[in-house]
Picture 1 (cartoon, helix red, strand yellow):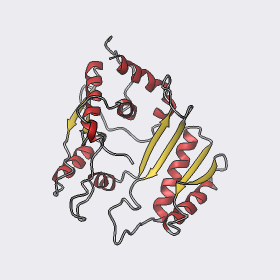
Picture 2 (cartoon, rainbow, N blue to C red):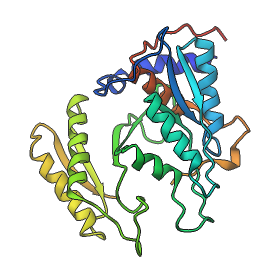
Picture 3 (cartoon, rainbow, N blue to C red):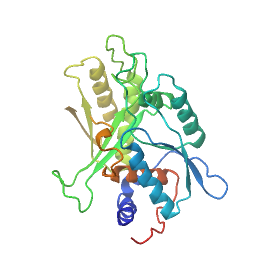
Length: 267
């Protein structure tokens, strides 16, 4: 449990990113407990979420998990529809990696994509930050990456690899990025694109970012031309690093407006 103590302590050190949540959390049930949809996913997803469940259980965190299994190899969408319904009902979820089975016919829709589009999860916010005491190739990293999640080449709207980018959604994600930068006291926003190759789609995205940037003179703006898998080869061996999932659970607790100060059992 020493690692669990370290993660919750670390979550307090990360308060600048944990705080400032502008969305309203779902209401707690009677007794102050919250129900959270938990989607284990594929590969190491179940392993990582088991760490979260054990930590919460030992720490007496007032959260009950509703487990919904999603099978990426199924051709029908009953499982993902059940997950979407549960998320809408509970208002919050933790999700492991979900594999996209490339052996299925082109008409098969990615489970990840269905989640994003059905729930309009347009902003994927990733905080990349160096952890105290962890030696890495790059030191003092502190970057927030914001990815538009509902359009582009991964939106399952293909016709001969058609990539759809709209002005409305490009402006929306750019505005989100600059507002978040201002909230968190960030000094720069960088638009990552492929406008050198995809001149119309990514060119429009880049132009929208520049337009929004003009309304934020206090934040510097620049642009940059720039995979992961589900870890099946190490699934079930209890060797996958759970730090990212544990910190994601801390972000979830902050969204629920729950204090992070629970008693962690001594190792």
